[in-house]
Image (cartoon, rainbow, N blue to C red; front, side, top):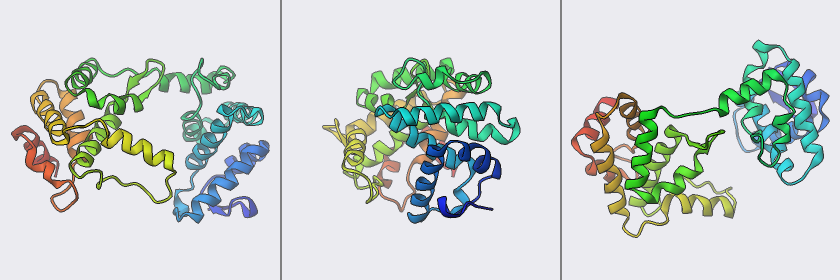
Length: 273
């Protein structure tokens, strides 16, 4: 464990990140200290404070400032990208990924950060953002959104990359969460007390709104999955891993959804558990 003293307190990051990367970019160092202290004060385990975790916190905070027009934050992100470009490949891969997750794509606000990346880091960005769903999965998602249009806001919230693809696994996990929330009148949503009013309103919009007949929507989703199981191995894996595995246990809120499952979904649930 490294002890960074007054700027963060104890954490599990490497000396390379602390002394070579963050120390060279004062604003990044300042943000890291603030974010790590806030996490520790909120009760996060110090073992979570890895290089990747800290870099993602820094990237998220700096990019938020960039998008608000902060030129110093933009310069800090550019400087971090240059340091990661020159960094040791084996040590730096997880940090590169954590840095890139919040970097805007070229052409988006703040996209000049991506435009200035060196070849190694830019290649990692392009590989990650050039995401395409498998054809069977893409067709499945299209059929789902046509069958249950109320799910489109959830799908739009999970779009990512150069091709604006829906991230299939996170989306279907959100579908499961919405179904359970609809059946419980929103009581099953895990909304933290420290969420802002905006975050709370967005969660309610995505997971409880636009459902005049909640049970009918849930039945439509379940009937669709029931009919799709067996259509393609990729679809079966997706439905099981991202939806069925996310359903509540019999003693948890929203367990009434288990009684609405068709025989194929029940079989997948038994096999998964």
